[in-house]
Image (cartoon, rainbow, N blue to C red; front, side, top):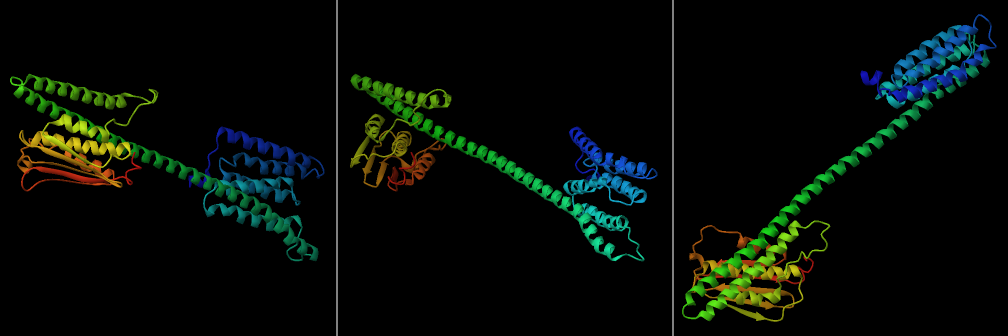
Length: 403
C-alpha cells in the first residue's frame, strides 16, 4: 500500500523542483482570472484555480494525494464557474506523474477519473440540458470529451514509456553488474587455478633438482669414500663431481626462488629453465659411471618446454635408479630423435619391484603429468626379470604451442 501512496519518495531536491513547477503554473494560470468575471464568482474562480494547481507540490511525494486534491478543487470549480479554466493543466501533469511512478494497473485509475471528469466537464462547459440538448451541443460534446480524455491519456502513455525505459535501463545495469561480478569471481578462480599450477610446477622443479642432485652427490660421496685409499685421484674426481653438482643445483634453485621474489618492476627475468636436450649427455655422465647413454638421430629444434620435459624425465628416472636400483645395478638411457617425435627409454637391471621405499614420492606422477601435458605418453613399470623401465614418446608438432 505504501508503494502506491508514496511510491518514489521525494528528496529535498524533488520538493524544490515540484514547488518551483507549482509556483510557475500558478503564475501562468491564476492571474488571468482576476479580471473579466462577475464580482460574485471571480474570487471563488481564482481560489479554485489556486487550489487545483497547488497539490502538484505533492506529485512525487504522493501522486494519488495530489490527484485527490486536484479532483476536490476541480469539483469546486465546476460549481462556481461554468467555463473551462487554464488550471486544468494540473490534470495532464498528475496523469504523467502517476503513470511514471505508480506501479501496476492501479495507475490506470487516473484514466478512469479523467474520462468521467471529461464527460461531466463537457456537459458543464457546453451548458447542455440533459432533457433538451441542442444539435450543436450534441455535435461538440464528443469533440470536447475526446480532447479532454486525450489530455489525460497522452501524458499517461508518455509516463508509462519513460517508466518502462527507466526499468529496462536499470535491468541492463543490474545485468551488467552481475556479469561483472561473475567475471571477477571467474578471474579469482582462474587466478587460484593458475597459482596452484605454478605451485605444482615449482614443487616439481625443486623435486627434480634436489632429489637428483642429492642422489648424485650421495653416490659420488660413497664411491669416493670406497676408493679414497686405493685411488686418491678417483676420490678427487668424485669430490669435483659433488661440487659441480651442488653448484648447478644451487644455481637452478636460485633462479626459481628469484622468480618467486621478483615483482613486476624488477625488469626482464628469464623464466625458462636452462636444461635442454643438449644437456642430457652431461646429466647422464654426472649421474654415475653405471649409467650409459645411447642417442639416435640429432636433437631437433624443439620448444623449451619440450626439451625441459625430456630432460626432467631422464633426470627423475636416473634419480630413482640411484635411490632404488642398488649399488651394483646399471642403467641404459636410450633417446631416439625422430622427425615427428622424441622417444626415450630408461631401463635398469636393479631390484625393480623388490626395491624397498620408506614412503613413495611424487616423482613418477610428476613425470606422467609432464609428458601428458606435452601430448605424449609415458609408461613406468618394473620388469619381470628384475629392474625398472621408464619409456615414452612426445610428439614434436603437438608440443610446439606449449612453450
